[in-house]
Image 1 (cartoon, one colour):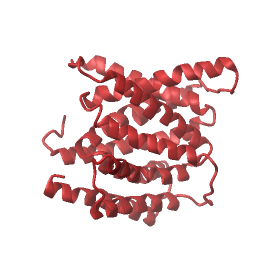
Image 2 (cartoon, one colour):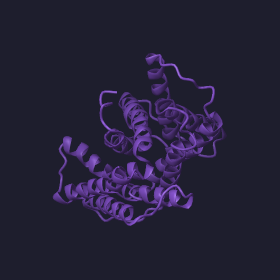
Image 3 (cartoon, rainbow, N blue to C red):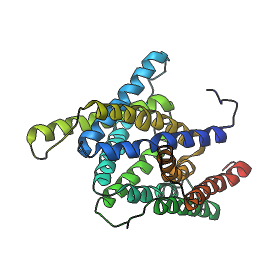
Image 4 (cartoon, rainbow, N blue to C red):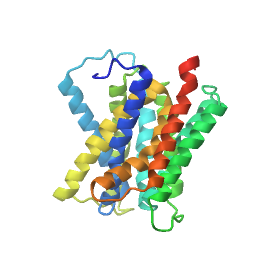
Length: 302
């Protein structure tokens, strides 16, 4: 890798930032697509497309892996539940909520991660990590609330988004523990394919049963956005996330998620949007939280 001379901590933080930049593209794209696609069909196509893109890149690279000892059953289960169900819940929650509420709820990912780690005895809830999470969540909330000029209200989909956030935190922690024997790239491919394989028959069953009306637009503009979503917002962003979580830990990597609203605003700025000082200050708080969470690790190795 081009920055292999950097320390694991530097690599992990760089990959976390890159993952968030790529993931940020998925929010405006999904918001547009959900006007002509139902949440289940969009979740299925984004995971299927992302897995196909990663599979094609793996085939082109021609890299060989010693896969005989990989925990395939665990990978399939974790992918089906964490990515499959989680992606559908996130899409459905976004459809019945709004991007501001979704990004606010997403700021709780590091909090759920450290709670899960503490319950399993894998992490200690120190004053340092508590302050770091507080800074990161405060920064994420500041950016999110500053980005809206309308009243934020509860719309019902927030419960689904919260469920998706908990599943994502669980998926990330299990991926770097139980699935650690699998390298980051094939681990991403396997779990994403498992999520797609779980949702595909469910989608087909619902479509043919007629219980719910499914919708999907195959117009050239929509297909172009689906392609961008699969390649950047899903496939490559997930690979970067896996590498980051493995290098610096899920809780620290998750602190970077609180800068996600800021990256979405930067994308909006590129297309004529506005950026407020309060939003920049919020991003600085997130960066301080991420940095603070790693100071003790550098000194003590914990």
